[in-house]
Image (cartoon, rainbow, N blue to C red; front, top):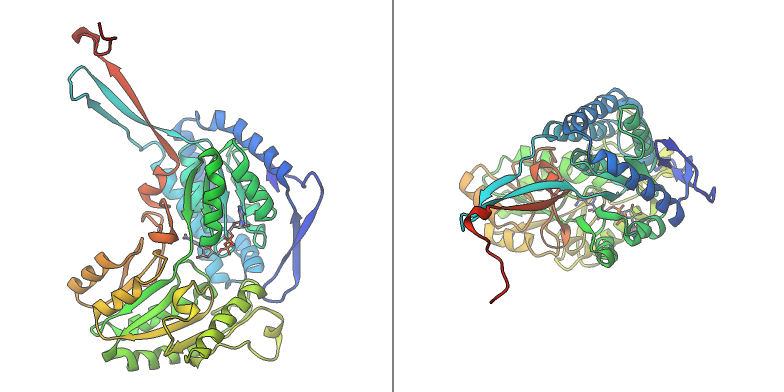
Length: 485
Ligand code: NAD
């Protein structure tokens, strides 16, 4: 773990193992933190808060720029560690590490540029000022699919605003985050401002919820866990941002650039082995282009090369765990039992090195029943159901028929149509003619059960501040408050 600027063991000295999803082999072990370890880290973060929250914004900004520079400098090494523990291809791991650096850089530039407000009272006898104050110690709880970039989405704005952190990575992906924690101190972040405690969610995460010194929980993960986080946070009325699951629709209209959309669907579904919150999870094709589109997509998907993430020829790595693969397999089986046709993939590759890892051939399914699990729940892996719709209104009705509302996309060459769809899609983001891409400057978050609060953009910074009002009175005009006589 990383507490108070150094690597430490759990006070119990217990550890747990981390595995390579491409081979199933053990690659490392890390401390198995318990509640006492979290309490120690939170105490350290609380002590560090007193100073960091008062550190001039210019200095905070320079530190964030330096963090970004050091992370970029070590990107290759960090990306290899990420690929080893997470499974994603090295190129994707590199972009993820760079995304951490981008986020820090973006918020470094905003530090010191946040403005409050000054407004005269409506009664003319004084004014009020609105200022922004940091919140305190933040507990950041991370998932395994983007362990590095999502740490950046939290610590970037959070540190800029003057908060301190205890980060809990997912149990299966602690290694890269631990390396980054040390770089951050080398960049000049005072010891204790950023701490990382590794261990199970049910212990380390729960202590973060129970601990009254943790003022805010920034959580990314499944909707079911998010509900528990919300419940646990209510005890001390913690501030909360929840970035949860999604079942993103992609609508392709009959006037779309089919070739571009085919590329977008393949990348949008199968990047990170289909394990992104905003992966394309349901594809809706207008009747007129459905046949041509499906044929081209099947052809494209057949060219996706499976392999270990460290092999430069690999397009798609393994699923992150065997359990994750079994979940996807059971969704594909369920769809088949309800009459779906598997157009390509949907099997474990046979023979050779790939048998050792958690590989699964990218699957496309047609004639999927809307009641199938993959149509109504989040399918977190490389399988895509394709639906044919007659027009935009049917597409929108189907697309919105979910508890989720994270991302969505519409593909058309008609701007009016794009606007019509974007305004009606119940999702935190709609991409027009693009697969899902998150950018530091664009707010990101969910509608409905995909969560609340926003990360990234100017809006993301707001969630790391308390708004404080200061009222100042001009008594030369007399006093407004008095007991009745
Ligand atoms: P998960 O909910 O299983 O775990 C997330 C984190 O919560 C882990 O660190 C885990 O240890 C911790 N945790 C588990 N139980 C806990 C408890 N009782 N108290 C506190 N912490 C606890 O999610 P996952 O499987 O790691 O990630 C995949 C999910 O994350 C998918 O649903 C995906 O869509 C979602 N996701 C959402 C976004 C977004 O921005 N909306 C981004 C990435 C992933």
